[in-house]
Each structure stands twice: as structure tokens, then as C-alpha cells.
Amino acid sequence: MAANIKKSGNSGAVKFFRDIRTELRKIVWPNKKELINYTIVVIVFSLVVAFFIGIIDLGFSAGFQYLIS
Image (cartoon, rainbow, N blue to C red; front, side, top):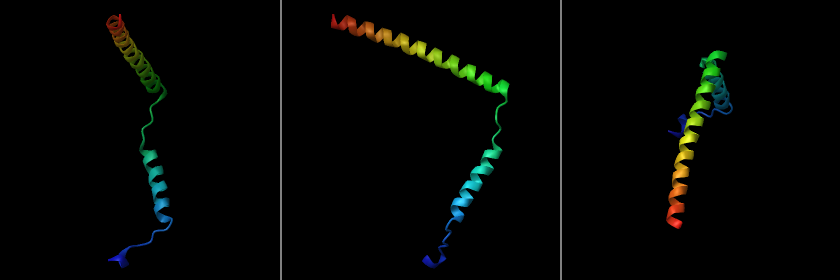
């Protein structure tokens, strides 16, 4: 059983990097218009989430202040 194990040396690393290059070529990169649209969506979504977290934080802050006083 152990005699069937093939020592690959550097061929494993070479194959790994060759596979990476092959996979990177398969990627469909967004064009400039898509990239701008995706960026705007991410910024707006981040601002909306930040707003809701801020509102929740203000609510908790007011609630703890009420409990303390």
C-alpha cells in the first residue's frame, strides 16, 4: 500500500498555481457601470444599517439612563 504513494515534489505546488490562474480567467469581472452601481448599493445599505443601529443604540442608552436614575 505504501509503495503506491507517488512523491510529487514541486508538481503539486505548480499544479495548484496553474489551477489558480485557470480559475481567475473564468471570472466575469464587472464593467465600470456595474461597479459604480454595486458601490452605490453597498454605501446606501451601509448607511441604512448604521442608521438603524444608531436608533437601537439611542433606545438602549435612554433605557439604561432611565433604569439608573
